[in-house]
Every structure is written in C-alpha cells, then in structure tokens.
Image (cartoon, rainbow, N blue to C red):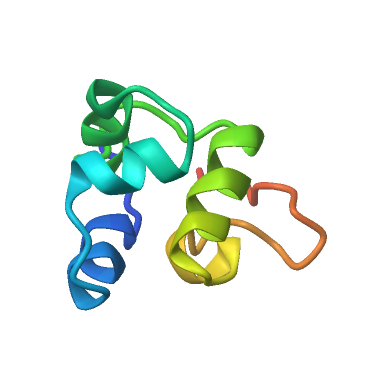
Length: 75
C-alpha cells in the first residue's frame, strides 16, 4: 500500500520535526511516520489534526481529499 500525501514535504518546509508535529497533532509519532511514508491511511480525525498543526488545508496534504472532506476513491 502506498498512499501518497504531502505531509513530510510540508512539515519540512515549516521546519518542524516529526516529533513536534505528532505532539501538536496529538498522535503517536509512529503513526505519523507510517502516514508520511504512505503505509497507512490518515483517518479523518488525523487528517484534520495534522492539517491544523501545520496550518494548511487537508487537501494540501492529502490530494485525494475533496472540498467536502470526503476521500475520492482512486481505482
């Protein structure tokens, strides 16, 4: 499974460590690492908290997220 996202790129542009982002997003750093590597999906609550912690939109981090917050199914 490889779920593409831009979390690592945006986090690095904001000069934030993975540990700091995990702390701000109130999630385990191991989960964040798996999300950044595309190994597990970012569930809606995680997407929202990560985006808020980075001060960006969910769609900027997760291109498959539509404007209404739903995930576009990719075949």
